[in-house]
Image (spheres, helix red, strand yellow):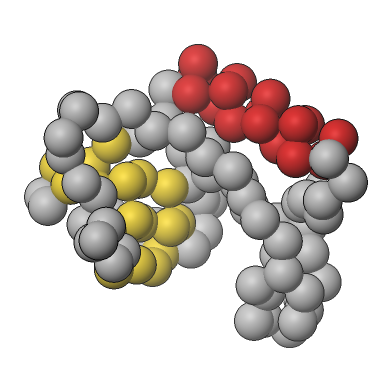
Length: 102
């Protein structure tokens, strides 16, 4: 969901890591291609998807594919806040705690 005051545009390509404890997994080019194919399938099913951005107060899914070892369970996801700007070598973003599978 876009909670800002202007259009938000982002994708899971190079902007998100899926983390298993302190190990961060980024999507590969192949993973990104699979995510794009799934997004197309999602759209073909008549479901709303992200096109180029979402307006304030709007929400839309973003699909990502990550390869992690079998049996490992993701604990957090890192979502980059701004791909173009770093502050003192640290890229701004958001760390999202994931609920463990039941």
